[in-house]
Image (cartoon, rainbow, N blue to C red):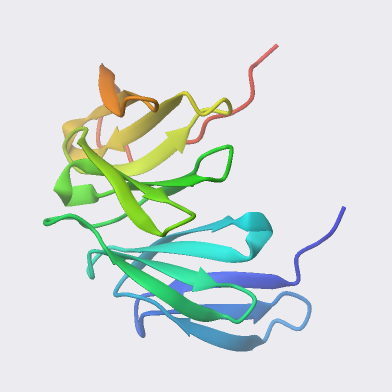
Length: 175
């Protein structure tokens, strides 16, 4: 098993990713991103990363080899991007847009928005099934989880779950 020597940390002040060497414990670099980075997800075997920036209403695309911002994607009006999840095939990134009440689908090849779907009140966490067929969003103040058909990006079910759900983790089947 290969152990990563780099840790990437989203910082509110200043709006950067810190690059930490895990062996020395020292900061070895920074990468500019948008205000209040919330989530980081890697694609293309770690060559590229997406960072959701809540206050900026953007997603930053980062070239991880060069450790530089490639592009900033402005999310739909009213969005406060929170959670990110990469499709199992690595071709799409799903973004929960918080106060915007939506989930957007980003195309990894073009770093552009393919679609945006209304899902619930303040979706924070987002998860995708291993087969890529369904998405789930934790809709904070809505006290529910939306189930979305990933092929149509339509909400197929809403599940009440209690008080202020934040995160989503889809685990392996229990035997």
